[in-house]
Length: 153
Image (cartoon, rainbow, N blue to C red):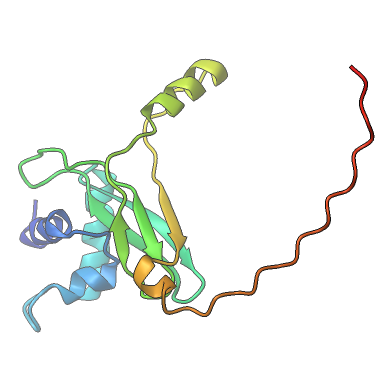
């Protein structure tokens, strides 16, 4: 593995959140890191070989971007599988913790005759910090409940 690929994998492995290619580039000291094209090629190479994974995030405030995280470190030791929450206001990611979807996927595999190899999950919305500063939307008036016709037993 080239020095640039090792450094980029190390950046992904040490990050507490998914990173875009630009985020990766910004983690290098000025004038010492690889150019942007090399970063993109290295991320692609790492993902193709199973060292990294990515997802595409569609954010209403910040546009569409691909984010990367390490699947294993430089020694090949697996990194924990993570799911993410993305705040559309402050653009921060929150780690949602351990994957609790194994039972659901096992049921899908059984009932639909599938073999699930991998998955990615991210949620979007507003974090607690940003949510407290947003104006509250007025509650919509509820429709009055329609009277039910009597039922016989």
